[in-house]
Amino acid sequence: MIPLLRKGTRPIVLLLCGYLALLSGPGAASATASTYALIQGSGSSWAANAVNQWVAEVDAKDLKVVYTANGAAQGRKDYANKSTDFGVTDSPYRGKDPSTGAVDSSLGRSFAYLPVVAGGTAFPYNIQVGGKPVRNLRLSGETLAKIFTNQITNWNDAAVTADNNGKALPSIPIIPVVRADGAGVTNQFSTWMTSQYAGLWRDCNGGKAAPTDYFPLNCGEARGQQRAQTGSDGVMNFLKSKGSVGAIAMEEYSYPLAADYPVAKLLNKAGYYTLPTQYNVAVALTKAEINDNPQDPNYLTQKLDRVYVNPDKRTYVLSSYVYAIIPTAASDSRMTTAKRQALVDFLKHAICVGQSAIGPIGYSPLPVNLVQASFTQVNKLKLADPKVQFDASIIKNVKDCHNPTFVPGKPSENYLAKIAPMPADCDRPGQGPCAEGVGSFNLNPGDKGGKGTGTPTPGAGTGTPGAGSGAPAVDTDGDGVPDAAAPAGAPAADGGTGTGTTSDGISVVATTLDPDARSGPPTVLAALVLGLFGGVLIIPPVVAQAVARRKRTR
Image 1 (spheres, rainbow, N blue to C red):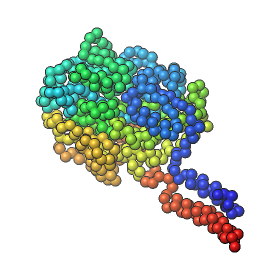
Image 2: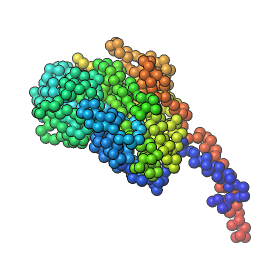
Image 3: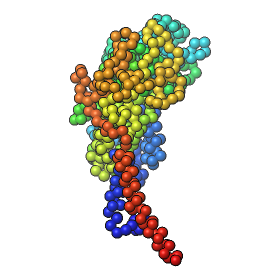
Image 4: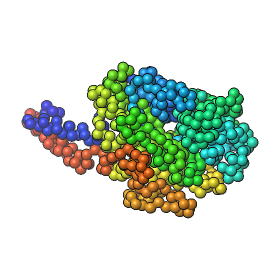
């Protein structure tokens, strides 16, 4: 087309083309397939279903990623040994495992952590009554702790019966299923035990009340009812096998959800039994304490003590984040420009648009402040190699991510936590248990379908969207605990619900979000530019050609 343009129009074409290139919004530019190299990662099987979904999604863009779910501990080792380009882990390097003394170090390889997904550690089980599966089991924290420390060994134990409002289960042995490898799920469970049931955990863990990636099978005894399996798939395969009636395992919610296996509802501090839905996890993690010191090697890692005792009725107590480990040194011998570019674009997808579809498969999307903070970590790959393409403006303007935890124009609000449905009265001690499906709604906001009940609606949390920051919490049942979390816009330790510090002095990561509800330049301006492009540059040459042809035919 350009050869047909009149004299003097080419500079205008170049300017307009440059403007039109911006219509896709900040951070939209990405590398072509020819600039990518295959990248390899390993680690958490807890996060593997989310990671593998992202791997499949970017494969359509000719971005090739290989991920091996060999456990968080091995993932950290692989990264340290430069066997991989990135790792995925639930906990940072600790020098050595606090319980086993196993070496846990990066061995001098540079690294940075960035959260990539949140979720809940669930407890799927196989209990049958009259040949039919039980699908509404409830457990208090103490009962759960005693089950996995061999203090409660039969399903008709009085503590289990009490948790289920007097509904006795059959007299069958409990078979706790744990991980045989160094696993993030073991770390999640043992971190919770160390915080909440230190005495029970110390007695089981060789006298050490400390987290570990390596479960002490049968609390160190030579024999016992516990069984150890390798990997998340190994755990679920055992649970589904013949002869596993009576088994209960610890696993990320995504795995039993995909297998349509029931998981136990856990009792929270507010006195409600809840499931690890994306909503309940989002609520719980508004109390996570995030390391907000960019100079600290453990920047963005989590402390969960306040999550375990979050007083919101919707809290799922065993909620947490999982992290990617990425190389930041320009001298990293394993990395090339093509590998860094592939890693940048893979992570950009994972923490932006990749968050939009992970809720329904058993995870919970990152809040806006952690999306933005993660992008600051991704930018370190470009700082290590200026040839890498990454538009850092996306750090402040993440509105095109379509993440259900934040909506345009409301940067101070964790929308997913705000609209999380309240638990039913039958999920309280002394009532119920509820029927199967109650409290299990896990689709994205606005989606319909599924068998769970408790569909969220705007205003189910702290007032209708757009209500002032002083919207009052409500205590409809008079139990002294607000029905919802803090009022909209109130600061929290996490979840994108504020900046600065919380009321109790916990530091949080600052958040910013462009309030413009539209993506890219304003629609009217874009339309005018397109009209100018057509009216000034395209139509006149076409008309001129038509006139010339008519003259030649005369």
